Amino acid sequence: TYVIARPCVDVKDKACIQECPVDCIYEGERSLYIHPSECVDCGACDPVCPVEAIYYSDDVPDEWADYVRANVEFFHDIGSPQGASVLGNLHRDHPITSALEPQCN
Ligand code: F3S
Ligand code: F3S
Image (tube, rainbow, N blue to C red):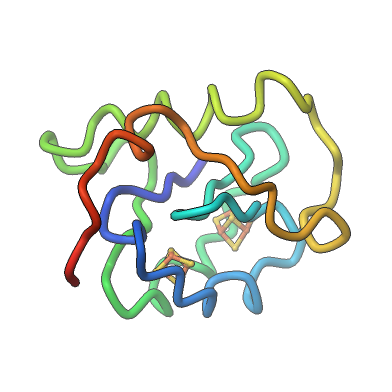
């Protein structure tokens, strides 16, 4: 799977959403999250993010390693909805994102 890491926080450019063929990039309050089992690893989202927030899970920089877990745990209570666009902004975040001070990117 691919993972959205900290650079997305408080940026939420959303260029990635337009590229995803399976609509598996879900919106939280301060960041977006890739569904780990819905992502088909096409990689189309990766190059379009202007802040380089998106990585293949094995390639996430060490400083953002926790975001692999965050992109999994974000979905624990909603399972696999099979479509992000109908849900829109879920108005919540993983705790590691919620705990961050406002990011000035
Ligand atoms: Fe975030 Fe980059 Fe997508 S800033 S919303 S991961 S294009
Ligand atoms: Fe979609 Fe990116 Fe995965 S475009 S299928 S979230 S690699």
